[in-house]
Length: 378
Image (cartoon, rainbow, N blue to C red):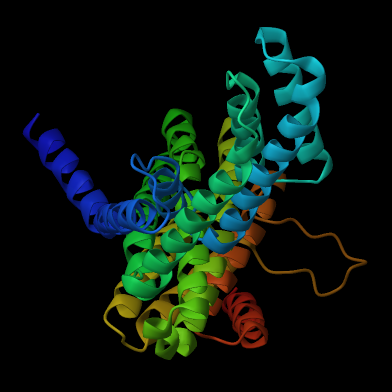
């Protein structure tokens, strides 16, 4: 219970560090928008503008400009459909349903996203349920939505923008930690040939989907900030490296998941898996962990690169010497699923080498040379 409580506190502290600035942005955007609506738009009870601003800040991380455009387009579309149809249908329950359906259908035909669909339907409801009908509502509602959206963008991108590198590091940290733990568990399970533990480690990798999604959204937010926020323009070059690292980290995790799936199949089918293979998985996990530490401390990741190279060499030994003459019979040390798993490990190592700053073509060469060294040792 104590360990579980400490783990829960660490997770909540991590979430607070990650999303604390988002709360500050939302509060500041709501305050400014309320004041602008009350003081300059002469709205005694501002609701729409602050709500829009908070929605832009909190729900559109990584695509605030696009979501704001969608939001305004949705408001305009809902107003247009409602104003056009209500004089013919009147006001009532079925009329409201018809207007909402038509507004959302038009939004879908325009290939709109979630914000456009939501705003088109919500605005159509507002227009369809007003009694008596208020025709002069359209322009004030559009203006309030525009003010809220623009202030939300200004606060999120100009006034208090996120720190791109810190955001990515905080999002990547739990993903790497969980992945490394799953890989080490996989290595142990393969070493003792325990099908249940292999399946468990595979499920742990499959459950990394939310962390991968959050990391992708964080990358989009970081790229948006360095594109639009003057305070973060100087970080464009460094973010380019981190963006490349994040993308190749995601690819390597997909390869690790495929490797775990094929190894689970190999263990269940009773295929041979030499000792070198789980040792290679351990090296892959250690290399990923060391790479994360090196990037966070801004050090040259020579050690992690060497561990990844050795992992490829070990899996090459597990596979066995390649056939020099295709006309002669050759028996690999791995079975069918094991051979596929070995290829996935090489792909994961190649992506991690690229994430460490190695040129992609050079990463391919490193992996190829490591495989050739394994053949020469055999």
